Length: 211
Figure 1: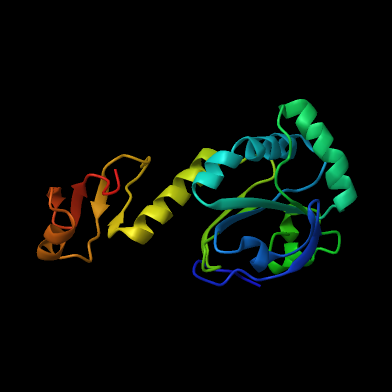
Figure 2: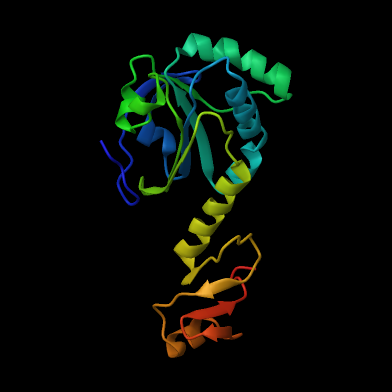
């Protein structure tokens, strides 16, 4: 199954370290980050889950909850969580999905046959409050993810959902943004009374409207 941006995130029920969940019910009215990792008791994954645990408040500020899946059992997840807290100084404060039957991994196409085994690659799905997939990301197993970048994209998505702007390369929250090319100058004047810097008719830079 190939999932695309704008698709409804497939629902599922699964056992997790925090009990059985219905994924859509668990998301509620908020956003979610569903991510996979190759296996428990592996080095890169240990650092990644420690990093996600340390970002709980920053995700919460954006109304985002994290949930993680691999093709390991819930019992293994629970044993491994102790290693994560010991080595990373951060407790696992989000649910880990037990997916020994690979139901979730296959539903979200997280197993790549050419990767040499049946473990999940490093996939990320950002899902909005309407259960729509808004971002996908796949890293190779050898490279740990950059969670600052994931938070940056969430900031961009939530900003551009509410204002008629887009964000330029390397944008960070608070930087100037681009007036939507779909707006005429007359329409833009109503939304951006402070004006903009027109580099080209299609490239109009303005202050971030919610700052």
